[in-house]
Image 1 (cartoon, rainbow, N blue to C red):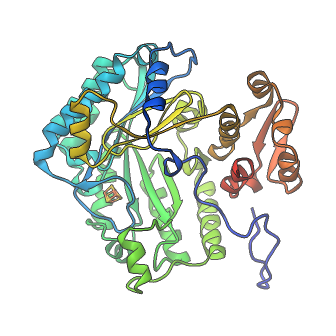
Image 2: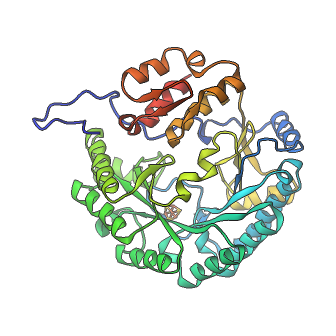
Image 3: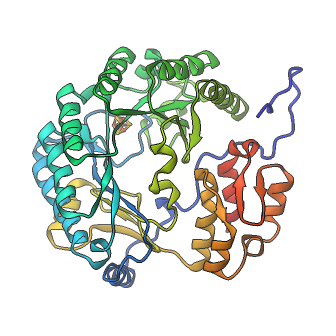
Length: 439
Ligand code: SF4
């Protein structure tokens, strides 16, 4: 992947002006829920799950006790008095799904506590919600348990409780996902990340000492970032031996405090797209050298589990049951949904006995074809024979010109059986899928 800028400063030819960092078909585009589409969703839930792929169960704890300036997740300030009614509502929502035919005929091989920051909860509350999932859903014998959290509130007691729970379940592995973003204290302070790099590092070491997988979020092209901080961040993660690094370019979302700070000049503007691209390539080289390989949409890892996860390999058929205030990653069959927020509105809605859905999208056959092509950005192949069986046409016929164009640019490789992204195309995988999904 030696492109971008020649030694003499001349620009080498690039397939696109800049790297896309955001995929199509996100919750931002879902239409409002209507009586008609919620009825269709409910009818779908009364049918058997015939897909036969393992699913992910993902209850969200949509609170956080900090306010990172870039955060766009549905977080409200943590309020202890909301915890009991929230967990009660979360269980009711989970139970409402658990009673449907579709979920009773589904099998889950991952339970993921997401959010938000689930680790704002006490250890026994974390275990309580995980136990509720175990007791009411069909989990595989080797289920994977994951808990997202923040290093500043992730005590050894909470880690031990999660580990003990997973050990009793005989989980395939237990993973803690933490947002580190950077090990540079100056940038951490600028982003209002509450603990220091040293404190975060100590928590990661504790996790790994307990035999838990540590999967960390790191971001690049942060305000004030240099090639030196990029290198140091990756080298620190490698030294710590973390099992996974989710590596993202910072994308500033409108209405976040960071957007306002950049607009007012309080924090430096981000580097341009060429520099951002160089940062990624630098990190990629160090990671490759250290034995990490890319997987999923943004992860680097060296452990087998990350290369076999159904939540990635099963896209877009497997399904993901996501619950909780503001959750936006759920999809079941052709339906994708976004839940009501904030927490009090969510609690009130669940207590009325209804699915707490704010936006609900239903895929057409054409949408599903495009979503199958989106497998390319999560580093999965597209099986041409399966595509033909499902849609009656080959991908080349469904998207005339697009595949040939991408092959001629060296971004895709195609044979009789499958389509895959090449190593040169890996960096441009988001751009590639937009070629199939532009309306
Ligand atoms: S700790 Fe995580 S969830 Fe909380 S504000 Fe920061 S990024 Fe958002």
